[in-house]
Image 1 (cartoon, one colour):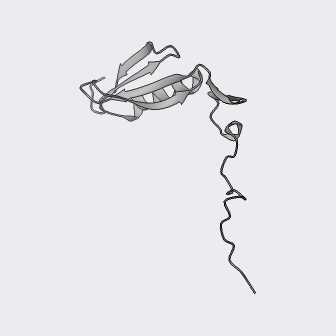
Image 2 (image 1 turned 90 degrees about the vertical axis):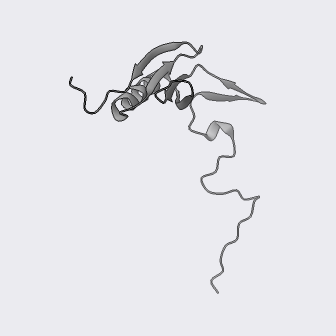
Length: 102
């Protein structure tokens, strides 16, 4: 007889992470009972007004810079900024219009 397997919480699910070290987030490290955060850069975007900033990416510097440049090229409207680990703005740029003369 072919039985359908039921979910048993004690077995865990395939693909779920049982331990924080198993995740693919390189910015956090598990040290016993606490999580410590290493220096991570952020990419943020805003609308035309520039009042509300939304975080698009967090991670190492190389990845953040790559995402920042891609966002500026991909979007035709808005402002983007790259923040350092200390929260200072390292780079800020407006999206280039698709129909600009340059």
